Image: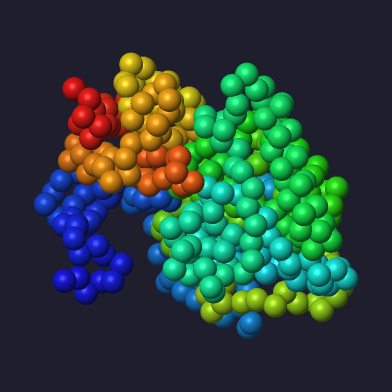
Length: 442
Ligand code: PMP
């Protein structure tokens, strides 16, 4: 029996009691390298002194003040910092408590924008299969993960799906990146036309796919083409950077690398680095101004929006990333991590693909490297890797189960931005034997 509902009663969970830098320590005194930061959360590692000091200072002064009465210095400063760094005119930020809340806020904002812009018939969202946008009802509705949605289908808003950009499995033999992107752009355009372009509110995508497919970056020009299709039909582009944003890919906003600006972007995990629960949604001048000139008020709100302590923690996290130039380290260590993984698994018959951007790296496991046939889901290969890796003293984030009968098991690596070259080598040293053992490769 477990009194904590979110704890798996079948699993014998260690009790986490401490952490410093990359290291996490359990009650037995065992130490783990945290190579995934939970689900790509702990981007500064554990126990970061600057963040802890900022939290202490804020709590001592004022832990919380309701946003209908007051604003606070850390919220204002964090908003200024994020909007200055964001591309284009993403000049307005709405602070929430996590990723799903950021996505919900984004969906509602897109809808309200169209209503106030005189197009109230725009209500459909188009997202992608093999996507994860959160577990609240709106986020679940647009997500592409069938098993997560199944029990709740009657409760979900109508959403439509197109193919993700997933070159490893979906680019056809002999197809160039350009041709592949054209095919995906055509599919989006056809979907918009089928729904009636005047009825579509937004296209939503993860800039780099996280949990459902393991750090899958788009091919060159994918988002530029998607942006063009959206613009042609007055459809908003919403990017979910809850996992990939805030430096994880080596850019503060992952879409900077794709050379585009979305209308709305959602961020969370790396924003507060796990020190406090915080997420955010940013939107462009056009959306903000339309609402301001219309009803004047975004019909939304939660008790903890703009939480002072959460903002103080996130501000210290973001200042640390900036002051220590950690984005350069993310790019360098990311290159190294992919190179070391490719070397370690070069002849491994069950490692199908190694991919990612920055310190956001996926390893896809397959039963057959040539045919890319996934492992039988019943084997739970990903869970075996996680367990074996934990035994070896390294934490990696596993995902498995087929989607559309194809995507198999993968492991997500998301080490902290402060990782050294030696840390990266040690992560692979500990992970390698775990993958061998879990896949039965000796
Ligand atoms: N979007 C993406 C891309 C995510 O990876 C996640 C969390 N894994 C969410 C949304 C939901 O965030 P949260 O769990 O903080 O609600």
